[in-house]
Image (cartoon, rainbow, N blue to C red; front, side, top):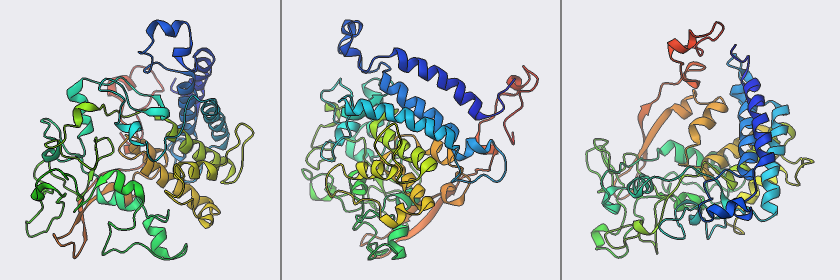
Length: 432
């Protein structure tokens, strides 16, 4: 029969993770049998990967969607604390390996090494944060992945389609240099207001600038003046910059932004016409990296014991874990405001916002907004662009599309009808 709950399945999977942790090495290169494949072991599953995915499996099962088991009255702040405690213990296993030197949070200066700055053309990125990734594809597939967020005019690679980050995602998550979200900054409750709607690209979180291309940004310092700066402006009269479209093609940005998290940049040079940088590196999306473990550890620990508690398994509070990510380099991003930490729900919101920023464009978002039970809310269904004239004298948010998402129907995919008819008591997913 079909399990009665997601928890039942997760606990069964947990037994497999426990066995994997028992059997797997910390590092294949350190083992005699690993010497036989020295230099080719990075794709192999390790003890750290088993710990990390054990914790992720438990946190998913503890999350509001799974805890509610598709029943009404789902509360986005209500977690299964028993499973959260088990998840914290699993994540602590990774953090203890980090303390032994197997992993390390990347510094701000070296953060590109996690995403694209590989030691050589055939080496994988990931740096000291690498825990697990699937094997990469061929050279063309790697290039299409790295260039997916950037206009083809820059990189000149055929077959690449630009994936434009939506304005509402950026606006709701990438906050200000003072460490606050735009919403909290504008409230004035946590200090002077620094966000100016008439100057939306100023005073932002450093990660906003590092992982996006914005209007007027210098992108080709070696090129002629007319190609030197990003032109992402758009006017409803039909006028738009060279890197912005009216939505009728798949190359220039349709939203007013491009994302460059996986795009090789050397000395400020994006443009491969003047700097052949693509061929030197390998972009790769990691399925698990150390920053993700810190974020999940903080979420599970806070959901169970609050922001300040230190568990028996590891000497780090949820507040400490989030601030450790922000403090990769002293002063880069301020700590979470104490008043936000003191408010349980606000701090959970901040953990989630930190997750959306740090793991942006890494393919975690859809799972996250589902397991938190918020995907059906208008804030997450609406996809918007930011329109402004060439002189940036005004800014207007424009709705591009509003996705259909109903709870609980669209939180789960339907089973093929013939599969639900194999065994009695195996019903279709809710709403299908």
